[in-house]
Length: 73
Image (cartoon, rainbow, N blue to C red; front, top):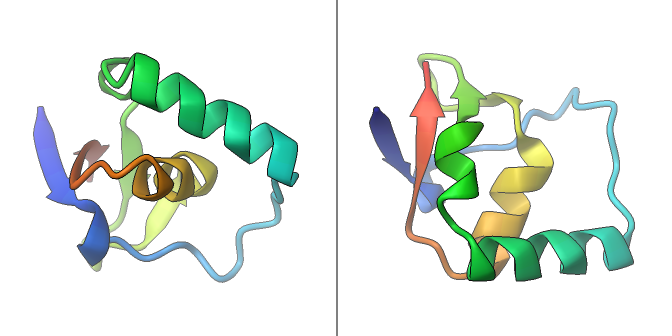
């Protein structure tokens, strides 16, 4: 499995999905309690570190204080 620094990943400006604040807070809490969940569903990125799948998980991981996340390039 490959890991990437959350600070180096960029959200996709064309991402059509949004997340409400209450949903984001639930996701942050979930990642703090069970960070291994990200290994089951890594964030999908391109070669330029732009997120293709997992923009909301990346945002939650950053808010949860995670320095690295599993990624699939």
